[in-house]
Length: 397
Image 1 (cartoon, rainbow, N blue to C red):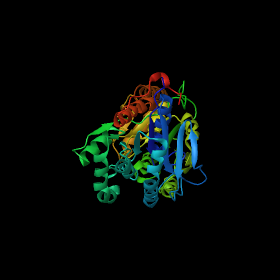
Image 2: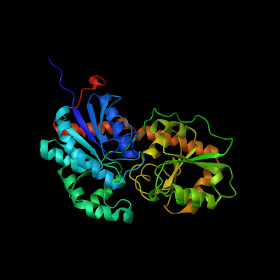
Image 3: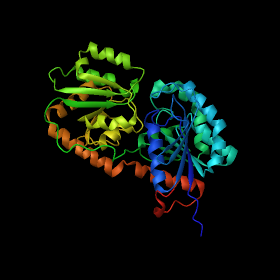
Image 4: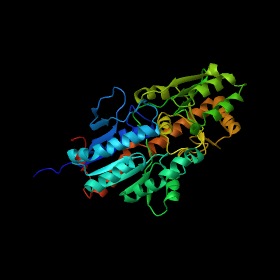
């Protein structure tokens, strides 16, 4: 008797590691987990620099197409549009070639219309995975014009999808506000629990090592963190490592000098994902003073590394961090409250360690990529009207 053909899913995202941030990481981790689960996964993404146009990433087949992308850490709207146009031309042929059963598109824009086009051309069902900036209302006035002109397109893409999934409850609520008639599911982002080992003892000697990982943009509130640290002249036993690139890097470097913090702040720049586990292992506390968030991968990775999180009380953070148990939550823009939370962990290293251990436990219980992948597998198989791969077929594809 011939074994059934394993399901084959086409993932579409303009970012895929080492290019991009959290959305690209989600694409990679979910793809790898589905391959382990017995499915086949092909990813259509943007080329950049000298990255190979075809690649096998732990069983995930990656196809990179020209998209005029210049940088790994950021993408302009023009570059997104180039990717969308090229992918609209490329995706139908690739879907036929791999005999895809369904598509999973990350971000409603610029990738959502590609899923819509596949459905029109081939009848291929698709699922939209919302990541943050692709949801109208996210980042308020900063994204208002972009969302105003793209809102009708976003709604049409969501309406034609088999399912629309947000990566946090807060983002799902925002999406429902934009399109009340459309059902919005929620599957949380995850962390690779095996990539980094949590600490086994507290750091009692030397400065407390604070860490921020993310894009250096207004959304992340690093200026608020600097204002908080500037009030802590009596506390000299801390350092801050900033891993990331962005439009505010030069401005933040100047602010660090102006506030006389530069000797304790290190800008590491953009780091490829393989280098991040060591950065988490060399930290004691993760700080995320964001003004808006979806479900930040860096926060979940920090929790997996056993770090307490001091974050803003915003959607996507406050549903993950338990105030006083796995870290502390403060109001966005409140530098004094942020400084108070930082003083607690600086002055009580044992407390910081206990918070970090609880943070790791919470990540293990609720935020693994395996859990997210299983949830997406069920949706994709339902969209394609096929059976999920048998548990015994794990890794055989």
